[in-house]
Image (cartoon, rainbow, N blue to C red):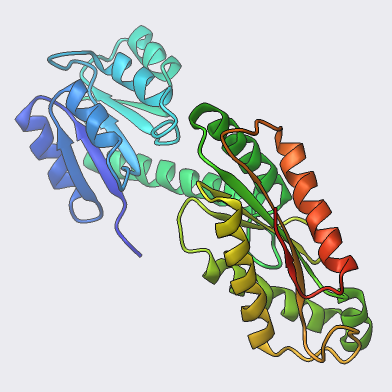
Length: 299
């Protein structure tokens, strides 16, 4: 497990040295000596796990730095602790009101600083875990329907702004009810996990999203991909699922598990809403099933 990263923002070398001595054994420590530098470093990947921020800085004060970090979607979730010589309760209230999670006055106890940092990092990790669980399908580990719907809205909006193509692939495992009836639901769950892993492996670009959107229905959201490219990907996935050679003796399609695919797209000439993109793919998926299943029907 990697060491958490702390960004220390202070223009006094003595304070930097004191915080470094207190933290280096347990954390990776970075330093910034101005508000502008702090904002730039907080946006760098990997982002810090926590920021220790002085109020008095040479360019912009710590309150403004905190406000800017908290209103930036890239850094909004990073906890900020003020470490400052300003011990006035009014200043402490101002710091907490600006978005900080804690306020420590100088001179500080290294043990107290470490304890508070540890607590806030653990709380952040617990929160992030809950966030991931809220958008993850528990059976397959893929994105769930909620995550997919949110991503679809975002990508359609981006398509409207930039005019880049956007494609969607919907996929159903053929005659999956018969599979469950014959082999049982535990085997059905294993089948879903194998298919999900195949889909996740096939989508290699970070911007692509694969989600489980129904019982045996999956979706692949493909930004900056035209219909032809999406159909090629769907055909590759179809063959990969066949290569899994999962027995399906109750199927009327084949002796192994197969899947049907519907593909739709938006390009710069089409500004349909996200519901239309999904409906188009669903219609194509229905056509694939009506024509014998185990096939891809594209736009």
